[in-house]
Amino acid sequence: MKQSTPPFKNVLILFFLFLFLSISSSMNAQTLNGIYGDGSVSLHLEEVEGQVNGLFVDSDGSFYEAVFVSDESGLIGLLGDYYAVIPWDNEAMILYIMPKDVNEDPIWDEAMEFELQFLSALENQEAPADYSQATWAPIKRFGSDFYPSYVLATSTWSQNLTSESEENAYNYYGDGNGYFGIQITKFPIGTIVRVEIEGEPLARKSSYTITVAKEGITEIFPQMEYDYDALKNVNQAKPVNFKYSIYVNDQLFGEHMEVLWTRSVNDAVYWGEDHHGNSYALDFIFAAYVNENEPQLDAVLGEMLDHKIINSWNGYQGSEEDVMKQVFTMWYHFQKKGFRYSSITTQSGSDQKTQGQVVRFVKDALNSSQANCIDGTVLFASFLYKIGIDVSIVLVPGHAYLSFSFTEDGTKRAALETTMMGNLDIENASTTDQLSDKDKSWNSFLGALRYGTDEYMQKAIPGIQNNEPYYMEINIKEARQRKVRPIK
Image (cartoon, rainbow, N blue to C red; front, side):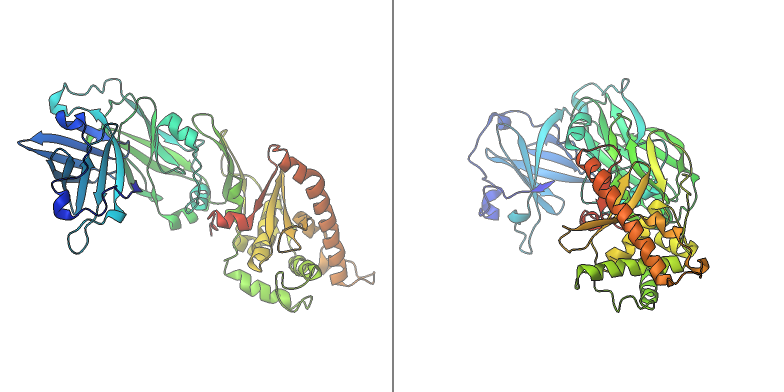
């Protein structure tokens, strides 16, 4: 639906009731009876005793009756509480729908424009539609399982995963990032199809209505009404019933029930293949596990200042050395807390058409003092982004680590191998040498910084620039700008 300003904006209400455009065409000399649509909405018109009765069906399945008056310039009528205008046009039927102001005048600046095509004759004017060849089937975005992490990460995402070429190839309707849909084929042009999908307690019944406008494969993905709190609380994999229903011209056409293996919210799906064989890189999902809003962060940042390495968290307000000290303060604190590397990466199931990684949430890593490569990276990224440092997650085949910038403009970057944090046990370290705990930690920090930066410069950056598989860098600031929000 798009807004448009018709070319007759300043015409008075009484005048446009009887005269619109001076354009004439063969359309008004022919019958108007039929069903018109653009794939998302449809308009049913029927001439009865000097007037034209209409029924407008919106994409959400709601419908509005209308009565039009016809003259040589076009059709004018009321559509519920809106004015509806159809000027005659040689090439297409254009429907304008506009609200009224307090004086019952049309508000032209808020007019909605629909370019409608003739789809079919009215049912009572032709033989009943033949649905014997019509088929339908439930479909999912990718794989055979359901990943709550994907839904939560894309809940406010500002771009569509589905490309325009795919939409054109498959007659795609609905949510461009939708997970659940229905595919239909060989439904007669002009058929009104409504799909309903529900998966309690995670997803309430959600629907989407189209008017079949093209031949070929049509895919419909409703905007699902998820219970986001319920999705966040899927702490272990479990089966969930999902029900798919399809209605044709408001009559139930078919139903299907399937049990979907629903993954833990800690299962981050970073690659998927759909039922067409299209591959999706979903690396952005790791940014959803970075949580600068975790309530524990403020208290921990306060504890870190007690180590007297820095006086305050000032982001880029100081020197590059100040940035280094802020990162080291976090490193030292986690070593003092006894953080250890954990190799737990097993997902809660297997699926040949997806790849994922178990990721602990920040609060879980803080409470357990354990972290694998991605956990430690997410942990540091959450704290650093919280204090205003430009930070990224670097992915290479089978591994992840942190990159950050010494400067606000991002031109001087380094990388930190967070798994080396557990190589030094400060509390149980030898006391025979003369080094303090901070000196020992500083040396281990510099080693992790040198190793990480070398790997970043010599392997990760070339791999990313050459678009090699599994080489990626996810900048947290850019992810937030794309509205990839923290899961929890």
